[in-house]
Length: 203
Image (tube, rainbow, N blue to C red):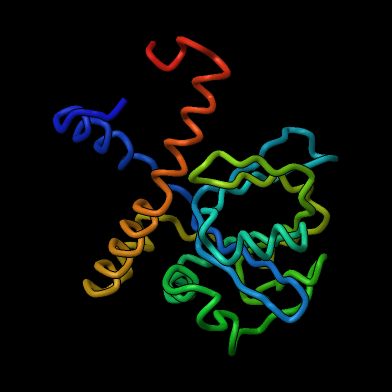
């Protein structure tokens, strides 16, 4: 169901209350490496001895290809003043440029790059992948991690405020382009789900 204009404004008002951590997710496949800025990352286990991290990645992104190939990724939290680093991974594609060029890194599990100057990081081995149309969800068993410094991580709203007007416009244009590519995939997935549970989609 598509929300009406009035209801959409109400929903957006609620969504703006959410201020998620900014994560940089990196992965590699042989000599190919890349990463992106993500906010759909969350702990998915309460068991401290078997931590699991869930990452949602757009299927059109190069990083998803690298994770699929290697079955590993590293998710990084950033220092509150690392908006520029977040921007580096937020714009453009790893297919077109090396987003890790000039950055201090070391190899993590599966050769996924670890950003040395991040606030903290978790290296994950993928144990399950779910295709939800406009997002690929990866459940990653945390196999290593480190809190490098004591600070509050960079969050989405602070990151956006740190950008210039031109960068915000580019970020919005990139988001709109992603939506245009991903929405048909999401609609196709919704139809599959509706067929599995007849009648549920109309409730």
